[in-house]
Every structure is written in C-alpha cells, then in structure tokens.
Amino acid sequence: MPIRVQTEDFDVSHEVAALRRHNPQVGAVVTFIGTVRDINEGSSVAEMELEHYPGMTEKALEDIVERAKARWDIDDALVIHRVGPLLPKDQIVLVAVTSAHRGEAFDACEFIIDYLKTQAPFWKKEQTPQGARWVDARVTDDDALAKWDTPDGFSKTRE
Amino acid sequence: MNIELRFFASVREALGVSQEKVALPPHVATVGDVRAFLRERGGKWAEVLAEGKSLRMAYDHQMTDASTPIREGGEVAFFPPVTGG
Image (tube, rainbow over all chains, first blue to last red; front, side):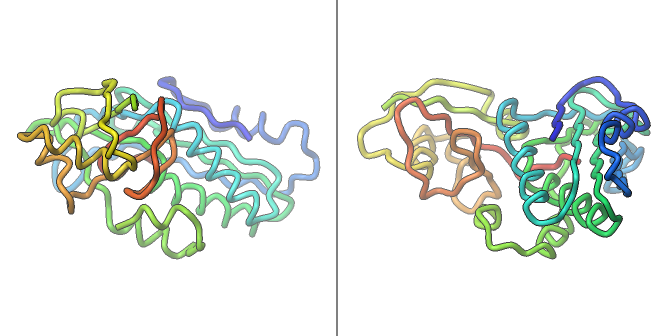
C-alpha cells in the first residue's frame, strides 16, 4: 500500500506499471489524477502552494486506503500527493487502484479520492490577480463523502 | 501538563505561529479545553479559535472532536477544513 507525499511530479505509466508488475491476478486498473485549474471561483490562478501536516498526512492516507481495502476486494492501491508550489496544468494527486475486476477498482478509487478531499490534511493557497487566498472547502466535497455513508469516526468531525 | 501545539494554513497565518510548546493548568483536560484555554489569550486567538468557527482539530495526528482527552506530551493541531486532492 504505497503512500507518497512529494514535491516532485509523477509519471502515471511508470507508477501503474510498478503497482501491477508482480500481480498477474490484476484485471483492472483505475486511476484518478487531480490537476491544477487556471480558473477557480471566478479568478485566474497563476500559481498554487500546497501545505500539509507532515506525519498526520501519511497516517490519514494510509487509514483511507485501509478502509477501501476493508470494504472492496481490491488488490492494491497507490496514493501520491504533491506539496509545495504548483502551476496550472500541473498534476496534484494520483490515486491508482488494482483489482481482479473493474467494479471494485472504480468504487474504491472514487471512495479514496472523496475521503482524501475531506479528511487528509492538505491546504491549497492560490495566487490570483486580487492577491493570495486560501481555497475554501467545498460543500460538494462533503456531499461526495456522504454518499459512502459509513458509521465511522470520520463523520463525527464534520459539522 | 505539557503539550505541543500545531497550526496550519489560514489558522497559522492568522495567529502568526506554526508550532509551540505550552504548559497547561490542571483544569485543561480535553482538546476542547485547550481551544478554550488558548482563546483566553484574547485578540486573534479569541477570534480564530471562537466556537462556531469552521475549524478542524487533530490529536496526535488523528482528526478528532472537542471531547477527546489529552495526555502529557500529546500534540493538538488546529486548522481549517482541508482542501487537498
């Protein structure tokens, strides 16, 4: 269950090849890649800075992947999240899930990114023509999480 | 009791501090108590850590709520709702 937080970019083909190299039982690979948009909330974004909470971040991501593994019959999962300065079009996050059949991999991949967006301690700060601003959490992200509705410790931290 | 405090993102900027060690009086026993204790510093502290603010808390690297008890050497963090991914 590889988890990586890094400033460097990642190569999706390389990562997926490594993830399934020794696993001939894998019949499906689902990947999600989050990228930097050049417009957010009506303002152009020249640059973005991603902050995180070292130590907690890795723990949170491992916990999310563990939950996905407990819920779906998946083979493995990889999460790479970048931090530091990023530019529009840059890759931010990769979630890759392998399984014998596609259904489990699709669901687990979506679950992992939905949980990551509301539970993993990352924060985005954007540079716009109006100055720097912290990105606000989206209600739609909470809605996305709610659809997985599990009676677990995560939901109690939501307001 | 001595604990470590951590602040991130907009909370860190508003308070002007990212990390500090603090000695707590005996009546401070939970994460929520720590938040209330820090509000007593007044000014920005009272504002940023006010009840009703959309603030997240973590204890020893786990998202948590105000009722979580704290122990000697623990780490309490305050930050805004997360925006990664």
